Amino acid sequence: MGVAASAVGSDRTTSVLESLRAVVREPYALAKSLKDEKQRRITGYFCTYAPEELFDAAGWLPVRLLPDESQAPRVETHLQSFACSLARSCLGAALSSKFDFLDAIVFPQTCDTMQNLADIWRESVGAMAHFTFMVPARADSLYAREFLVAELERVKQEIEQLDGQTIPREKLLESISVFNENRSAVRKLYELRRANPETVRATDFQTAVEAGFFMPKRDHAALVTELLSALEEHKGDIEAKLKPRIFVAGGICYPSRIIELIESMGATVVDDDLCTGWRYVSADTPTDLEPLEALAKRLLDRVPCPSKHRDDFTRADYLLDKVRTSGAQGVVFHFLKYCDPWAFEYPNLRERLQREGLPTLLLETELGAAAQAQVRTRLQAFIEMLG
Image 1 (cartoon, helix red, strand yellow):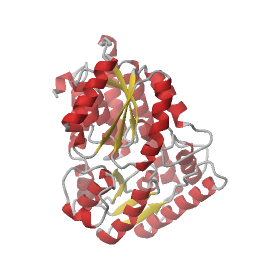
Image 2 (cartoon, one colour):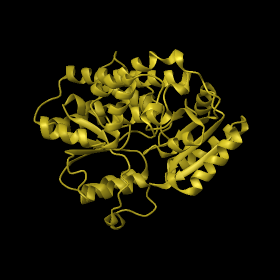
Image 3 (cartoon, rainbow, N blue to C red):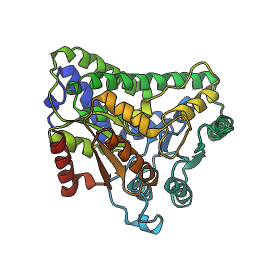
Image 4 (cartoon, helix red, strand yellow):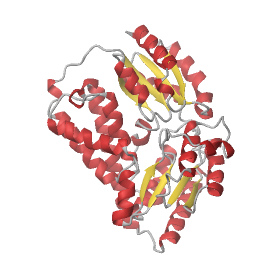
């Protein structure tokens, strides 16, 4: 895909996008260089419920572990074949020494597969420090807030024990502020693109979001802010084109081949509800509470993933509102194969959206599956039906 076609605009836009692409092309290269050059500790994490701010405040760099496409035959001896490709590929990468640069790994409590992987990883992979982080499945239960504050305090103390020094309150407040600034910048990018999807290609937009998983949040916020400024200069020159408008929902969408396929077929992704997209940046941490209380409140009040529940949140209502606001004509659900939480949610979501006149398409993929002819054919038929 040519750089010149990525967005209407200037050399400045192209330069920022290329910086973001470089991060995503070699997702862990920056972390390795910071470890080697600045002796910075690195922790990997699997889920957006990880308490990244605690590690950032201690001077660590948290990086998200996402599917690795290389094959690792040793995985079969450790993990069932019906585990999702995120768990299988990352365990395979770890067994192949690709994550030896990590000083620690964080397993938030999400699905059964990840809870099992936490124990398997502890027994099978290297000498890196191992953190589990228990997040209540019922986010609005009576003692959820109290429990989660205690969990945050426990993780904080474990980090301090590893470092041999305390995490100052001021540093934690600073990290909360930086992460809020980062989320705010990405949300503004969402707003700009929702207003006119032609402002920047969905593939480049997704790259801009994903880069934040692999680099210091201060640096990512600066790049996204620069991209916003460059795009704002030219947004008046951009004409909206009549393309089929698609909303993408689901869990992990990485690498972004589904989005690339949609664009290559003449449609456009106008918005998303992905854990590698909107759900990661949708809410900030309050600044009027004590730090651990504030972090707990955000994690419990945020848009929950399907492994978490609240009585005041109905996913079908939430999703319908987002789809309508985006002006999408149809919804593509993208799940990793064997993702049980999303498999339980999908039938109700599909029924509700179709009742409201919104067609849906479900794509369950494993690594590399997005390039398969069947997926391409089904997407093409769906887009033709919309257009």
